[in-house]
Length: 235
Image (cartoon, rainbow, N blue to C red; front, side):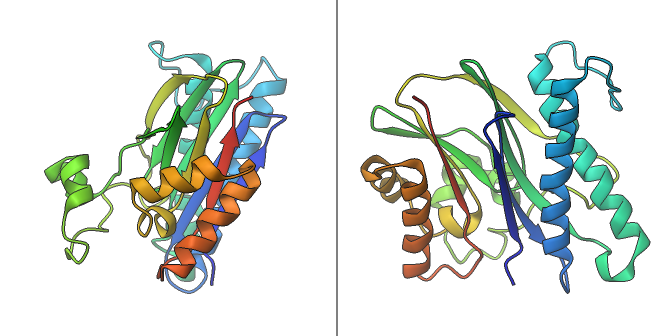
């Protein structure tokens, strides 16, 4: 069963990738709920000036960062609520990485270990931080270089939907023509190292070709997890 889910709405400037987890089909339910709840709030907040901010506004952040952070926290609330109603869905959760583009700015929000990368002039940079036990203890670089068989390598410290609230990581980036962004689940980055990601993104003829190639290569290399890639080109 594919428990990943993703959505792309260029008219809203919204791009989301989620990797669900949970027994039965609960992971699939969680990832779908996350993507749809995020889309719904971003659409509502784009078309109405008179919206409710259920978690208040963080004045140090831009409106778009507030919008996307709120959307992810609403998704958390929705998944947690649905999981509380049904034993089959109890404990379900999902990672989320989402981007909101407005003009020449991009807001990035993430929870869990789904990632966003930027390829700029041949240099690949990971723009999100993994919410994993290894990353919290060792730091991002050492965690990446740790033994692939480390028993705690994939233990997440934060996901969407397993608690009554979540605090997503966020950042804003200036867009530059020629930038290529990748949102992906660990089925991709768990099998393709930085050199492989760079090479495949650089040589892709288009965004869709890049996404297809990354998924196929991860499968060829024997990924044991669902693999989702969403690629954005900046013109």
